[in-house]
Image (cartoon, rainbow, N blue to C red; front, top):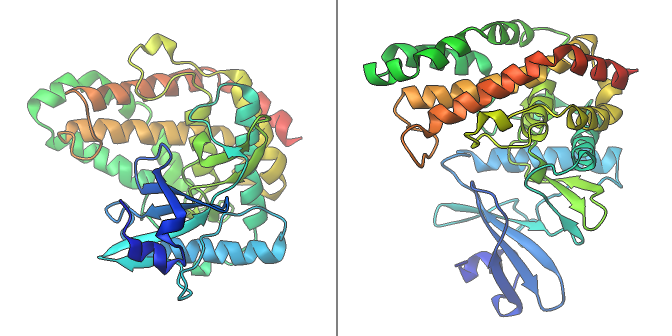
Length: 354
């Protein structure tokens, strides 16, 4: 399961370890290592199909860790353990491995089951963004280039509407027109990305609730985890992904679209949590586009699903022929529900900013 050479590279004795598969993530291969003395570690093989430059991940995390160690030495930032040779990663048979400390007394949840969980998770992402505000950005690089570049995603969507098979074009015609009707979201991004008042920050880029560790029993936020996509980006990436994944009671896989809704109490909880930490660092333009963040992320994910359907399902794994089509329709429904509540939700944001 794990070659002994990899364990030795991190100074571990295979005879002293119990090794088990770990976590619910789908990208990297992850193992929990339990030592006889009670110590625990998380060992991961990085998926180089997704992350083609693993050393960029390591460098971004080290830059952040060193900055935080100086600025906020008590802040819990999960920093990989170096090899016995002092390297951030161990390369074996062209595979990239890293060792991460296991946070005792922690747990994660795959969906927000109550507003407190949404509040605590958002607060942790906000705290990290606040503490990293002011860091020298020059050494950071994208671990997945153009990951949240809506301009690129919209262009790919337009291309797909032209090159799709006649059959798929016809089947998706109504849904395609509906998404094209929200093209102002892409136009807004195009304007924002070059605004001097809407600069890059070090963002997490994958703020699903299971990327925060909570304290067992109390669900109090402990720290952010899964930092592979820690890289330069905009505030709307992290906030938008929380809106997309916390406020709806069902996931993007739900086909009963009547169950898709925007729960105002969850929206308020995540905004309170996030803005209580990062709110004081925001520019005026960032403040004015906090509601837009949800539209941005839901729209981008929706057109990515529809683009993949039109292209013949070449990117997202599917379980049945209309899978990506239904995911796109799900996201359109969520976008419509969000827009319908804009006035109420903007009032929540305004209250949180005061």
